[in-house]
Length: 186
Image 1 (spheres, rainbow, N blue to C red):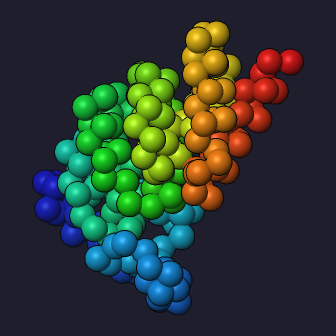
Image 2 (cartoon, rainbow, N blue to C red; image 1 turned 180 degrees about the horizontal axis):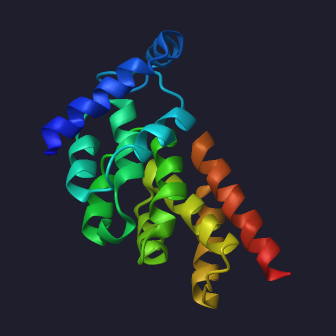
């Protein structure tokens, strides 16, 4: 199957799973998408299982301004294909905290350069990539990935500098990361 056929089948699944009430609420809340099907995350995860993990398909789905195709892109991107270049390109176009959270949990934390990418994203100061980075670093700490003393110090300094002006999602991500980092010190 080519990408066009896969996209058609994916959209068919999304239409069949559409939740009109949730879709309307998301639009009313100002979600920045061209189209919202209102499909809940567990159903999206089941849909993702029906399609191949393929970088070309994932990149194609990410480029669309449709909430569900972008979330499916995260689920269908093979971690080994999520290179620093691709990760940085996607980071520049993260649209919502939901995307940042899902990316941190299901994709970025599983990549070879997760820690390096996340530390670079923290340096940008951009709220959504930083939210993703904080949550990814949290996942890495939980998985017992080793952090150098310098990396830990950078996270502590970043956190104390950013938390006073951070938006709600970033503030929560920073708090989650620092709480985990503090627990790992003990």
